[in-house]
Length: 388
Ligand SMILES: Cc1ncc(COP(=O)(O)O)c(C=O)c1O
Image (cartoon, rainbow, N blue to C red; front, side, top):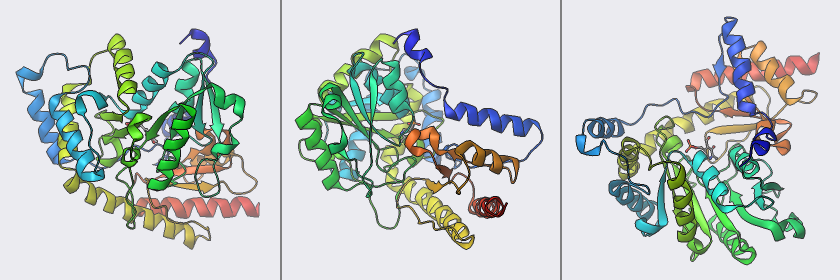
């Protein structure tokens, strides 16, 4: 990374959103914040107890292992096996991470040279493109097909020739698009043919509804020849502040990441790893109430939008609604109208790339009644703007 690559990166839209939110708060405005996707639910008790135990254990106060604590390795392996039927060798096919965001950045930084291409979905979680730019590499945006799959045929041959990495994110933030195992198989064979590292970002692995179960790319036979998958405790277990995640899959990619990480830091906090171990060990008990809460919120908000005349469908996964900005408004104009009027904070679609323009994201991080109020306020502002 050079200072030039840092200077070339446009300002982070979430920073700008935060600045606007702070200005309104400082002026005494009360806000309903459904902008950032930070879970508002409590850390599970079993996780809190684990953290307390670790914090008090003198034997655990030294530097953590570089790759992962043995208890974290065991818990993650058990989770991948019971949840997906996937078997890994945790000593070589797993790395603990202090959140999947920085893990994705580290993978990109450790797998690209300046001028290489990283294939990124056209609407994307910002770190995919930003870490690519920090590496001096070039993000090339892959359009979506109408069904939410990536239109890989649309990538220009010249870009494909320089591509080293393909990142995919299903269930998608902010798109809420889901994926089948067959589609993962198509992505694996594309990555194999093109000699790409396939990074599957599975941040919303457990947040799915109505019978849809999120598959893992590692379920595809032979996937670990080309793919790694990012998992995080942030969303599934209400643990965004704990900063614990992992990457599993292609051995050589994980060795490369380990080499990169060990030059700039130590292993992930032991408290965080053993908190994560507790969460993954007890995932079958922890997840259902969290999913039930998001489902109730999703249904309440979708109904409120429909009651306001909006054509909104309930997504099968994630903790978001991805909605069109009313005709005649631009992204920031709409975000400002909502903040200044009813005091609802939403995320503009351009936070997720140029192709996100014209949409906005609502995070289901407030109780159902608050979301209902927010949806009613949004639909009435939209009606007032279209009448004016
Ligand atoms: C798609 C996606 N990937 C990764 C992350 C980052 O998660 P973590 O808290 O593990 O860094 C998020 C957070 O919103 C996300 O939406």
